[in-house]
Image 1 (cartoon, rainbow, N blue to C red):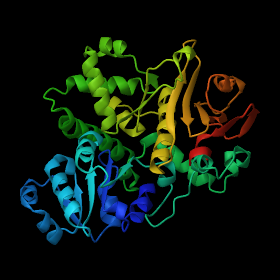
Image 2: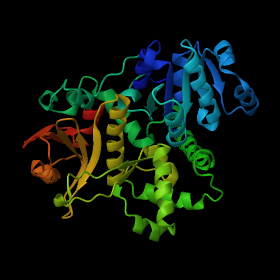
Image 3: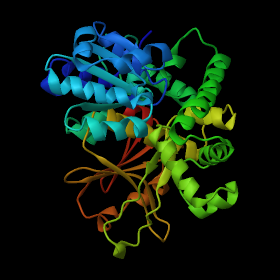
Image 4: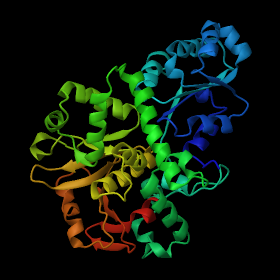
Length: 417
């Protein structure tokens, strides 16, 4: 069973566009890049750049030979052979007919070469683990139902349209089922196979983490000794949802600060973590500038920590914030994401900045939201330099509550599912 992906329709829309002659699709390993491309573009030749025998031949092809042999092709893991990106550039510049899809599991290696060689020649897309609306689909032909959040960000919905309780939603049962699964296993497509047992899924995640270390990390950093990186990976998993303190990390892991900074970049470039920057308008506001780290997938986090449990409060915050981030990126919505924290301890988990306003989001794992849960959202306009469109508390409370002052509490699955 192949889940429908948000990026699929965007890719198909570019198939015959002059701006889609080269599509670059990048994302973490096992997020479905190959499956999506081969299913959506069956008439394209599939070239695996990890096949050492074939790659030697691909390197020797001239632009004319590429056009004749592979006028339309998918090049998988192309970042492993940067020379081939130069070949595709040459074909693009000499002929108008050929079309290519370039796949890669490293934003760093693939994008650096793309920026050098294919600037202005390609359409770049990113794919993430499944979002809640994607998880709710049963087939690639099924239309994805946009979440309330996406419709709200597009201006097609308002907080007043939320039903009084989550249980009144017409597809409540399906949304709750998908949400419960997501809080247990995360969003990697392979795990949605109904034939898998709980043990199978956890074993797959453990293998995924091991493969990531043995392949992606070595590709990124040419490491001989992975132990310092493993220490940082575990530290970040333990402290997901927390503000980065380089000195504290260095003390706890016995890894130097420059090395930690490089490893943090690798974790983000390989789509394992999200570094959420702090929002500040000027120094007078006295807002901290350290980013927060969020593990991108809860299933992977569990495998790193070798645990099987419902999420903690910080882990739940990461689950919800990365889900929001994935939906924004998948729909290519022009929104900047931040966290906000003042020196006196006031925090807002997520601040979304649009061209003309902000939306503030607080994440609480509670099943009973009260006025104490909205205290960080009151009076925000005094800090911000654009109008605050609205503030939301996302939780496990099934009841929608309008607190006044532009603050609404809503179940996370009702908001994002």
